[in-house]
Image 1 (tube, rainbow, N blue to C red):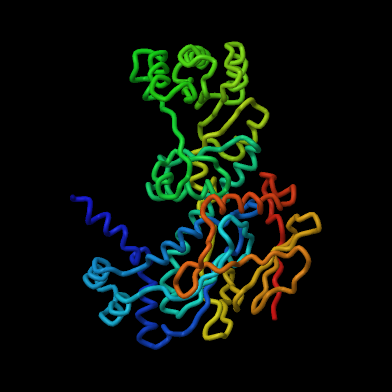
Image 2: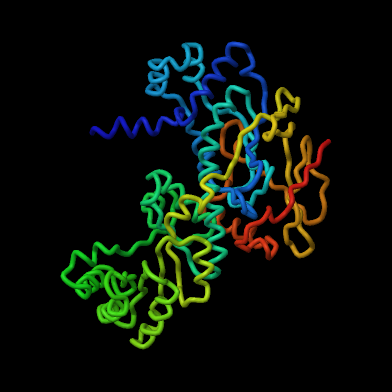
Length: 435
């Protein structure tokens, strides 16, 4: 029972924001600007260093969070006791429900510098409160998905499994599993991601299971008895070759897979394949883990490996833990507005973007126009789609399997050099047009 108040506090989504959002709101309510009709946009000024493209992920989670964004009694009591805002603002927050419109890139799409991945239209007071919420989700999930996409590309037809729950915050682990699945990972070890989002789950055992038994043979026999011959046995607790022999002895040649988690994975995989074939386990798969990232996966491409388990690198964005998105006001009462700050300028006006393709369907440019839709050319694809109208989700939004399939289709339109892991600029240019 002691946990219940804590869980309720977590579900009070109105506090998933920064103090300064409420500071702005309070001032805007007092001076009358809170009701000005505004357009905010989410975009990245640049990609993380060396990256060629980014993957939009987390959109579905943003929409769910916006629809649940409320200030309940517990949140209002907290704000009152801490004197964050005064009573007029508290009264306004008590009735808060986002009633504006949101458009954005479809989840699973690619993005580039300047891509308007999310557009929020509402009063200033309504829209400004969503800044932290939208950015915290999109920056995390898109960073994970962008890293995951590089790993999937490096793996080719071999599956990648997300196994990073123990290397990040417990809620971040759930979101990371979803984002990795969007980008092409086939399964996760995180059960809550399976329950909450329907991501397929998988898991075998750790070295502790082997060590708790009197012998490796006893451990393997117990696992096979419980999970069947198609299970995956971890064979490197002691000697790998002896582990493989014990694994095949326990499960027979029908053993599903072995897992290697240490040492020179390429050399061990080659030795393991030879030994498995000699023992008649010609269909037993070899799965490798151990601090893999996209570069390690690419280096293992010639080894006889059937799948990769990836942990730390995927849940932390493989060196780029944030997508670098910002949330900026671009229109106020129909008038374009923009920052002119040195190093951080913005372009005023609501943006509309299309992705240009050549006759073969390969992407060639991201064309962004402020104040209207770019002049169309054959092969152009309009990128923003309706997501919320008057605060409610647009009917027919895709589910997670459809998002995953859409990402795969979009990724197939990359030019060949887009799959390279070498450092470089964005794979296509962002071209700006202005009325």
